[in-house]
Image (tube, rainbow, N blue to C red):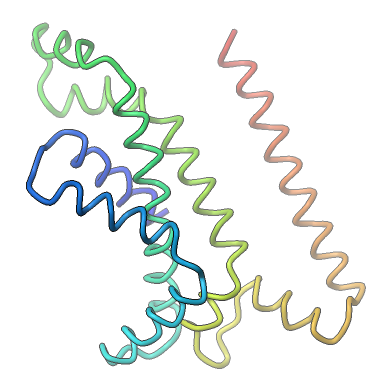
Length: 186
């Protein structure tokens, strides 16, 4: 959620304003996306140690926001770049204020990309083991690390049940998205 909100705001700002260092900004965004998880995990661990942060929930949150944020920025920026600026100009010509243009024109247009960014961030966070391993402390366990530690000892019925529940939840979410997409098209 945090990466989605920050990424959406960042994409809106980058799309709207031209500034020195814009190419550098996108270079950094893409470099984070292309960095191997092990490099990201070790780098973030070193940063947290230098900053004096104790590994736990806060470091995990910062790490997950750091590696999910670029995906949201790229998705939302692509959506904003793809729509006609004449629509926004027409709303302004008809007397809409800036916040009305944003909430009534821009947000509905970028909502599919924002939702896609949120789903992608959720999936990436749920799937991540390596970065989470480096930035969480002892005694702090999240689902991917729990599954990983359970599988080390062999696949137990608990692991099978947990994976089945995750699969069924994913299937239900995909089915619901498919039905909603059909309803919206009508």
